[in-house]
Amino acid sequence: MKTSEQPLLPGVYLRSFADPQALSAELADQVASRLRQSIRERDSALLVVSGGRTPAGFLQALSALSLPWEQVTIVPSDERWVAAESDQRNSRMIRQHLLQGPAASARLMELVEEDDGTPGEAARQASERLAGLHWPADVVVLGMGEDGHTASLFPDAPELSMAMAADAPPVAAITPDSQSIVRLTLSARILSDARMTVLLLQGDDKRAALDEAIAEPFAIGPMPVRYFFHRPLAIFWSP
Image (cartoon, rainbow, N blue to C red):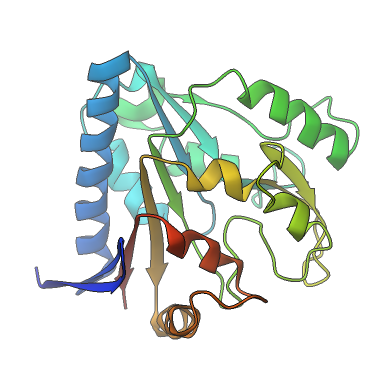
């Protein structure tokens, strides 16, 4: 399986794969190795994963690998303010593609729970629940939109500055004009401190957006993904 590796910035490298299957298999192996190491060191591991269609193959590949899943906690990077049974819930996608087979015994932490009254209250309660976990995360796997958003850190969200601040709470409610549904997202601070951070991309449009962001990595403006270029980052891309 043909792959290539290219440094983009100090600590940031791009791994290009011939197809999504090759990418998913390699990324699953690397993530599982990191989780096993964390379990050996402190008897637990914390994995943050994004939603959407792109991670599905990777999550399925990871779910089939053998490791002490009962010692792994999984947190969505962000969540839509929709009912638990909605197809738009990221946690539902995680359950369908990752919490299967050997991985069924892992613990999934929801960002939105049934009795949360408002998005703001849900963000506050989720921040309290997540504070009890062992941060920083061992692995964070992010995606990216063509506008440069990652997790639900959208460039047109009025709350973006707060969610990207150094003293941001773990979880923020986000109301971008471009989205019809309110989101909850982990803050940039929580997402960026991981022992292993991955940006998972697929397709030529995402590659073009990445190239645009990398061309001006220190630019102030849209494309919140640039925040993650200033710390170690592995970018996995396939057509």
